[in-house]
Image 1: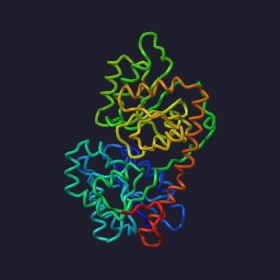
Image 2: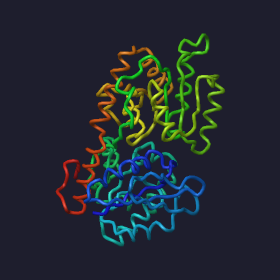
Image 3: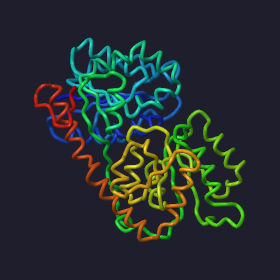
Image 4: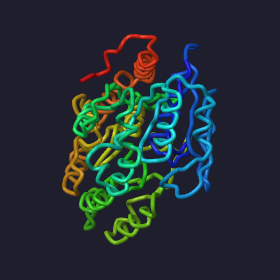
Length: 388
């Protein structure tokens, strides 16, 4: 069976969505039954795509015009020539949605869409007029025509239904690969690290301005009662937001305890996780953030908002629930720093267990394969598929 995975940017510009595609493609292709082909966009001024596709065919299509549209003239023909049985679309709001619609109309074959949180209330309101225009022009037809929608969490199921989408929905979370080397992870280093890490896009929805304001109050300037703690903000800049955050840190007088590390990949990313005491994600909106799953796979306790949509972390005691406002983040920082090393280690072990069980690539990709078989009519409807 030939499966096509279609997304927007295949470079690091695609953030967690491109990471999901990159990590899942080789696992989905593991049995001889499936042949996976990846399709996505190449940046004109940047890396064309991630070179490590582990034997999976990846078509990286050049774009013309504004990056926000992602118009790739060769994408439609690349999909047509691939003779795909089922197309799996990751993400919304760009030209790949149009290409997916065209492919479905020409082939009369099924497609599945994973919105990755792009249909929740905050996401729909961000650049709202552009999304309303896209819905009118193509995206609503694209969504309603999907043979199945893929929700990463219960909150996404509710978002789909609240928008009037009556498609079948498969509920399957993202998954995470364990680090290559697990030494010093099963037993966290306790009090040896005093670094709180954020890693991801530098974007207003991530709550980073409030994090900086909370950090100012957390560490205190007079005598710096928590002055042995440091905050690392790592990630790629979007729209010049890093400049705004640096200015805010200078204005607040905390530039000496806040490090802007820039984008971190591969070995540098591995080191950042290993050197941290905890991970923080004060987001206003998420689908199911891969970076939290990665943090747990490294044995990091997590401070995150309920909007990250991973309630399993709170239930398991692997994460502290924080608000997205300054006061909520501050309370989380104070709670975590006031915990003892033994409590930190217990959070670490719970996160490790959660990443290995609930978010296992083998388990969750096998569920996706069952969905593909069902869409191709070579298998029964899986238990993970919710129908109206």
